[in-house]
Amino acid sequence: MRSPIHRRETQPLPVPDLPSKLAVLIRTNTSDDSLMALAETMEKAFGVKPSLVADESRGHVDAGRFPKISLTPQVIKGFGFASIPRNWGWFCGDFSLYAAMQACPHATRFLMIEDDVFINDAGATELADFAKSTELCGAAFGLQVKDRPPKYSTDLAQLDLSNLGGCLFPLTIMNRRVVVEMMKLRGRVQEHPHLRVNDEGIFANTIIENGLAFGDLSVCLPALFSSGPFSTNPPFLRESFAGMGDGPLIAHPVLPAARIIDRIEQRIRPYSRFRLRHVLRGATPEIRARIEAALIAREADQA
Image (cartoon, rainbow, N blue to C red; front, side, top):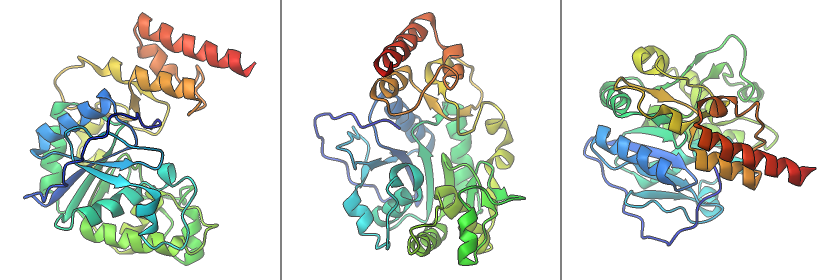
């Protein structure tokens, strides 16, 4: 996620008390056409406006016509943790869930999707049907007990807790009890600032430690998650997913060209041609030329 676009401040809409008691959340720290398109897709599929959980530690994020839950250092201090990781915006996606739990007191279930997930209308409809009907306590892509502790779950062993749970965090579904227990576990972890446990470690191992029913989304929704790449890197170009048919499709990470170019220019990510190989492969000649020009300009500045 890139640094937020500063626009004319608008009054955020109140977070709705959803009749279904399912809170649909989009985790972000930016505002652009790609984010609005994702919000509109989710709104159409779920029948409610998704709430943008916006990291505003670096400035205002315009939520447009969608409700906003603001996540700031002041909000996080209110959680009462003994310490806060410096890179919480990237490392602690679970903080967004704690803010949402406080902002949506009547929600009994939460679905959170990150702003660099691409999902089309058919995919969002299939996801909505599953989220509204599942009795699982938690679900995520690759959510399972691993043979070895994932990197950012390992330190939980120092608290005599399960550390074999792992998943990918860009799309998660959970009930309120899971969020409550996650917040307790995060509080225990932050009593020991040297422990490095990320959002995936908190989520997966909370479920395992409490013996709760969980599912791997790639198993629960095989048609959806077999239709596109779903991983952590390298990124794909959002424009290359246009017009790919009407079947359900989800992919991650997927970034629009404008956001990629901004990250190159602002030095927000260590992008190289190798890291951007999927982006460049899927780009039109015009977009490829713009990205190449940004990379050349950055390399010249660093010379």
